[in-house]
Length: 116
Length: 113
Image (cartoon, rainbow over all chains, first blue to last red; front, side, top):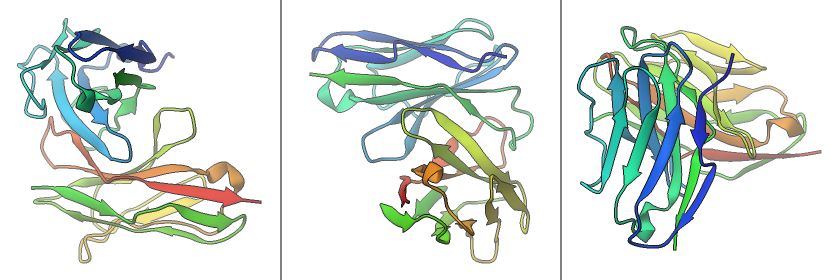
């Protein structure tokens, strides 16, 4: 079956512009995570969705970042008024369910965002 | 809070050499531990995992043992290949539903023939 997909694969934008990043999780996966990977760093958690529950936004670095998810399908991460420090690879991951903390997270290929 | 520390790279080895990448963690409760690998140009993939103390995860010749007494999850492989060249991330996930993975900074492994 298809894995997690993300689009676009690369995005170059100018400082101050808004960007939208898309994630399509594996069909049937109820949990979805967004992470950010800055150059030379590990992944930083941004936001988590589980079914129709309120999302865990505790990792969002500022109010310029927001994300939406419709049901158990596509998610969009929006960054408003982009800054150069937002340049990173943004990764999405999904899991079948989250009642077991041992569930493996399946990652998409990421979107490389460059803010000039 | 929870955290993961892994050895900094890059690690450069010759083919068939023995590999160890150290990983230690700080966590409350009983986390699950993971090694993820990122091959050049590809996305993150789970390499192996262990969910409780003394468990050993293994895959593709790699092994790691969950050591609660030393809070470690070191990755080992007896004989590396050129195709093992990649970035390796140690990660943990806390014992509560809905917790995200916490990653180390990654270790780049380069294997030459």
